[in-house]
Image (tube, rainbow, N blue to C red; front, side, top):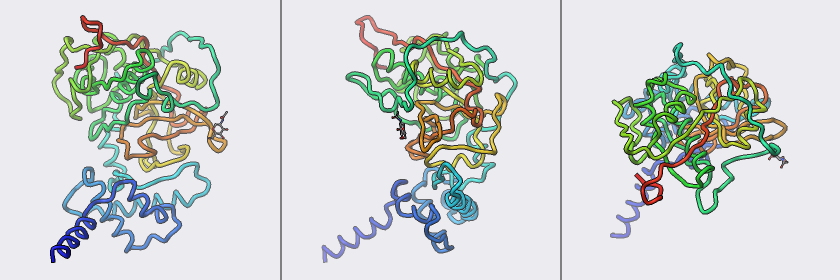
Length: 368
Ligand SMILES: *[C@@H]1O[C@H](CO)[C@@H](O)[C@H](O)[C@H]1NC(C)=O
């Protein structure tokens, strides 16, 4: 009897445990790729599992069937895209599957452009780097001696237009590892709350270039000291807790992809911007390329971090770290076509110079 109750309990648990995003991908992979028919019955099953798997982000939890039609429309787009053999990239199901295009734009404050928030027209004086740019290169594969990989873990900006802060901090963390060999996770929230005097707008957008300028004047503290909350707050930064400094930034010449590649290879990851259009949010693998996006400075609406570049099935690409969580895209990363100024990827790029730590009296790096 005891055994029976126990096994019933186990069966119940197995049924109610939500699939991980990876398990979801495996379970429905052949439907998503268009190899198996997408029937109404499967659609309902996929939607039910989706609600459990991505419970944290579904738009209206509890009212489970309200968003089925949006999910269903998006699924049809994903499957049609994946069946199209001319496409250089694949779509998948992710946490944004039950949002409309409009809701998605609002969620991340995309498309908010203000006049004081423009990329610099002035490029920094050219740096002559020694050494080649290999055909393929990724900072994700580089580990500092006795320390962590140069590319720090992918973060999640959540429901806040703070991509610019994540792009900036991603660059700071990587350059800090390159210059000091030390691993430190730094504060996006400090930038969201405190970098407004440098033409940044918290959860309503900003620019890495402006955030680097703020850091070079004010310094930066650790994530643990000033944790991320994903909404605008009053600035709480105390310069007493300044732990990292930087100079610069170095601004890459507009449209110069040769300089962008050289910078990634010889300086470190670069904060880049581009235009997110509707199909992008479903990216899962391959080299993203689009006929729909525009590519001028006033079109770019999302800042990210270029961590590498290479060639895949004859297509040149940049490897990019996003800030939509590691369950989005390809482990939180994506590839986008290179040497075409694809979606404006070459027009608004910068990186910090002279990133270093602020030492305590004992000569040790102060941890929080
Ligand atoms: C670069 O990567 C591609 C795809 O993985 C590979 O085919 C190519 O041989 C690589 N190039 C070099 C020089 O290793």
